[in-house]
Image 1 (tube, rainbow, N blue to C red):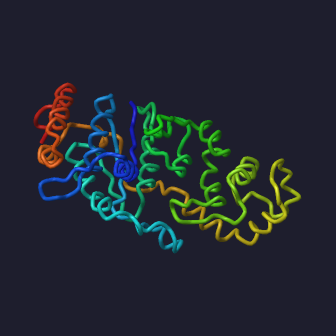
Image 2: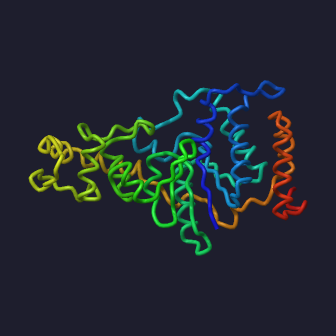
Image 3: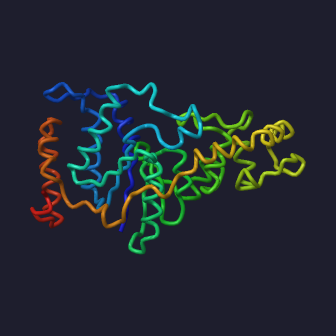
Length: 299
């Protein structure tokens, strides 16, 4: 069994920013990005996916906003895009795809939690997390892979190490030192990607990095005295950044059997009318029939 876990928020952003005409329904509501994501999930199902979970940020803010004042809060998001957040959730549910709308947690937390649930299920052979987000690298290993669908790049644990210079377990530490502009925290001054990777490849975690730079004994780290002083003075804030970058694996996502696609609901017809895409409903119904899903399951 193979599980697909999709970052719905990222997919919505990606489709919204794609160079294509939008689409408005009869009431003038822009649905272009929503339609594109739903169509993309339909294609994933047609290509053989059986179990799909899509994590969405129902609201942008999360518990992390209480930990760092500049953590991402949705400022600057195009209102036309933001208005499609709840529309995407409803449309995907109509398609029959499992949706996790996150409020206290973030979409990435749901993906991480679902990856753990899936990896612990003996029936599951492979878990594919569909997002290019750097912080998801911490979940990769064993059965779990990370897929950048746009570039068609699949990473295993060694792939994460090649890309970032650290093992998956060190990704939160790496982000804490380097910072993550997408999430709104800066990291520690002077720590670039290569320097942080060199230290964490040696020590794995920030807590294990010695205060004394003479103990580092790592080739390629320039300005060790200055960086060590920065780290010593900034350990408390680095620890907070690490919490920001560490996924919460207790987000509510249910169990693997709940993520199996069992056909579209009756609401998909209305959505396809709004989308101006009647063939999408036909594709979903045809696939359900092909998989032997009875009409009672179609709603």
